[in-house]
Image (tube, rainbow, N blue to C red):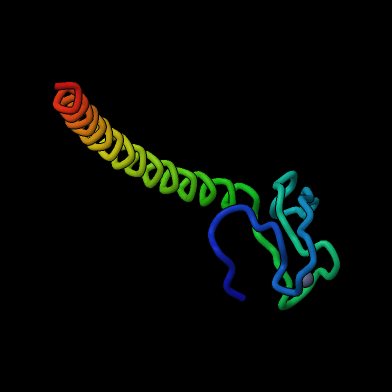
Length: 100
Ligand SMILES: [Zn+2]
């Protein structure tokens, strides 16, 4: 069963996940996500600590994407300001010309 990286919100069966704490000898106190309806094969199980690390990586990638988007928007804004300045100059020249 292949799920995306990060905190799993849903099991492939469509059920919401639940966050629980392990009580096994091997992993006492370790938190995990599992299918909120069925515990078993073909239903989601994922250790929370692993999910959190993945989630941070996903968020870091999204943040980088957003930062790049902001740089692009700033550049476009500067271009718009230049264009607007030119338009204002043209309009001013025209209105001067019309008053003559
Ligand atoms: Zn399920």
